[in-house]
Every structure is written in C-alpha cells, then in structure tokens.
Amino acid sequence: MQHALRLGMMACVMALTSVRALAAPSCDIPANLPAPHVESATDREKQRLLPIGGYTLSLIWLPQQCRSDSEGFACGNKRSAGFVLHGLWPDGKDKDWPQWCKPAAVLPAATIAAHYCATPSPQLIQHEWSKHGTCMSDYTPDRYFALSNKLFAGFVQPKLRGLSYHPQTAASVQKAIADANPGIGADMMRLYLDKKGWLKEVWLCLDTRFKTQVCPVHQGGAKPDDKVLIWRGGDDARGKRRG
Image 1: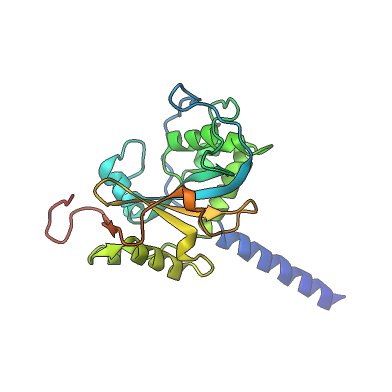
Image 2: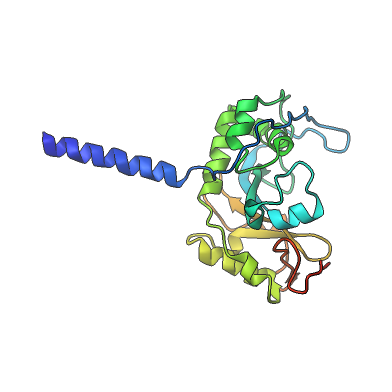
C-alpha cells in the first residue's frame, strides 16, 4: 500500500516537472499593458472558410523585429536576443489557408497578460486569435494560446547569435535549428527573409496532430543556397548597423 502510494506520488511529481518544463517563458510583465483593438477581415484580407490540412508554428527572430519595426514589441532587454512566438496558423489542404473565420471581441486583459511573455505584443496576440485562432473549430482564446505556448515552449532556442559572425545560408541556419531540436529535420521548417536576406522568422511545419512534418513544397520559403544575414541586436562588430 505504502509502496503504491510512493509510486503514485512520484508519478505526480514527474508529471508536474514535465508541465513546468513546457511552461511559457517568464518575463517582467508591464503593469499597464496597452489594450488591443478589434481586428477583422478586410477587402484586402478577406474571410476564408477552408478545411485544415496542417499547421504552421511561426517564430519571430526578435532582434530583427526590434531593428525593423519595434512598435508594440518589448525590445531593448535581454529577451530581444532570441525567438518569440508569432503564432499558430491553420494551413489549408492546398495553397490557400483559412482566416478570419468568426468575429472576435477584444481579448480579456488576463488572457493577454498570461501569454505576453511568449508573444510580447498585445496587438499581435489579438491579431493571432482573430485571424487564425477563430478558424480552429471549438477552440476558445485561452485554449488556443495554451496550445501555441506549449508548442513554443518545446522549441529549443538555437545559438544563432554565434552564427551571425560568419556567412550563412538557409541550409546552414536550418541545420543549426535542427541540431538544437532533435526530431525536427531541416526539411520541417521554412525561413522567412526580408528583401535584403535578413532572417525575420522561422516557420515550423506541423501536421493535424501538431507534430512536426516535412513542409509541403507549395509553401515556399528560402532556398537552401540563399544567403542569410542574422541581426544579433545592437551594433555589429564594427560598431555600425548593416543592411
């Protein structure tokens, strides 16, 4: 009886440890987070109601985001040295994807605060729910963000700052990410670069069970031999900004 009780307690501890290991990243949450505004479909971005064929977990390289467009993001601290969560996007079975599936009210302040450390922009959190989360069947905002945060928490941050000192290609950056994340192959991700070749985002391809899979060919992304520049934050080795 006591032996069974001890085993049960050990199992509970192991389960709690596992949950903690997948907890969202911690950060200092501002006392007065700005309230987001409602977003919805427009003439340019129309509503699309399509069946889901898979998912994309989009990760923003924060140093480049803060360099090019810091509005609404928490920049200027140690957290700007890695990836943050952009969002979890349902993909279609072909080239198009579902979006803006249902009207979405402004998210509660508590929901935004709970997920701010993974996505340090209240308006982006609102946008992700309105454009993508509403297309995920019976998901609530809290369930949607809990899932995307769990997937993000399972991603090991690769040491891309070190790579920024040497010439890189899309293939070499993908290899570095894959090496840091056993089970994720280089062909299970896409790199999103700006027009000058600076790394902006990494998109991980997921199946309908939220497991990584080989990316569909039609989804594009940087080609293996494409040159990739990585902004590591602040000034470069010469004390000047590049690009």
